[in-house]
Length: 417
Image (tube, rainbow, N blue to C red):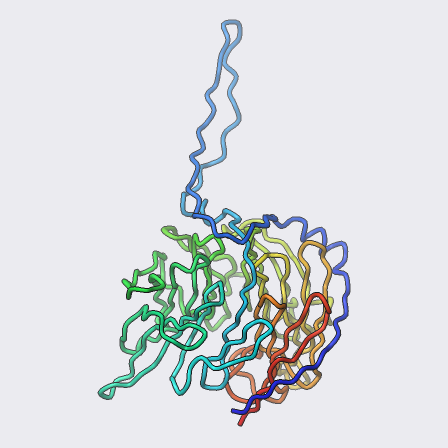
């Protein structure tokens, strides 16, 4: 592939999300932290008050105290801290892994390695990546932790057979653990170096199914993922040491399929896109929910972007203040067509449209200390799985949207050669 650097700018239009969205946003639990991870809180035992009596009157019973939560669930419900955006982003560029520092030049991290799923550490200093090798006629896989120069810092999971395959990796926000998901539904956590393993099976009742996306809670007290089936994706969360909770079930009646999700750091809530891409039925809109499955609220309706528009992907800023998402629409053939990229200010309710060239569709979103990084592929490039996903094939551009200038700078143009 041939890469050149070119700088252009594009302006952004702003609309207000309206009174309804503001009212819903105010329902979110705000908790802006200072960016420093705190230890997972321990559960507080609720002690029922004791009824009292006086010599001249019978004892007056007190109100029934609320039930005591399981410690694992109480830890998961804690809002936890918020964080700073990383100074570096790792991204796939064809068959290789690349990195882009804020206000710097993109550069390769791997060269001629067979790579699989990967995830960057919260501080942007390292990346955990599945590396495939072949020995004695067998396909093998291992998980390495690399720095921005591509140097191996640790081998977290030693070589094993590539069946079952690791399909998802996620860092804990304190960078102490990695969560791993396999294509047979197994989940495990493993120390994030420098020593190898041990791989610890994750305590989750039942098989989570085919993992689509995996993340840690910002308070490091549990995992959340999408479990895929023929009926759609279900949103599942499990506290460390607790039982799984299905937040939105694609197989339920009525069905509640989920397209994407983002935990809101410092707020104790999860934003997720519920709905389908079909031209009929309810539009896929953004809801928020507590990690115990209660207090579900509508945050953004896709209907305001068009009668058959739907929201495809979303990501929350590490400080918990903003939510970026893409809007698509079925075309005359039923295929998904990208229409716009938006950023919601959760506190004010303002919506900024991030202008992108008309001949691209946005496939990836990352937060970086200089703004919002987005990838645009040629609009004619075939989709890979989701239309908001880069297949590793074809030309693309990377743009960084600045919240100061309300415009994007194109920082990389890559050909598909």
